[in-house]
Image (cartoon, rainbow, N blue to C red; front, side, top):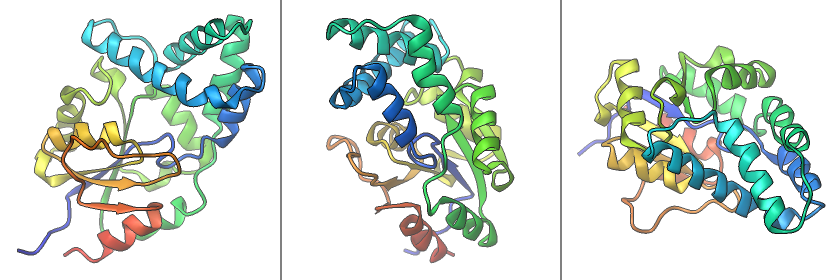
Length: 228
């Protein structure tokens, strides 16, 4: 059976398209140079975004990031004010550069006739600013923020809303992401998926396997270019 092209390619944004290195450095500095705490901060931020989701109490993702950074700091004896936490996260997050291969890959996918949409846990205003600063806006047919759903990925409502916005069936959508939890959520929602295996990224072993895995977006694009 021949595998056909997805009708819409949905892209996660942070880490998948945008390089978090500068923000990681600023967060590490805010934590007294303890960059080993970065994974703990990110997982704590994700945990509390899911707490907000299951509690039907939506908060801005940036605000959750600031709050959980202060939690991590407090647990390790680091004094971090609200202003300092915001400065460590918000400004760097809005000016992240794309990974080196991203623009070339997106351009090729557009030439191949793909419809491209972004779907992110960041706020609508935030992702619009990110894409403008990174020079990515023109590549996308739609830029979607889950704030319109009031729930965070990987809740199934976020993926269902995404395909409704693009007027396609779940089976006609493919998520491209560098987060195993996002890939798992999309697959469980009936989407196809491609995993960008950025350094430190892992798939969730108890979830279905994605259709393809690549070290960067160039590898994923090579696979997608072969589909008819």
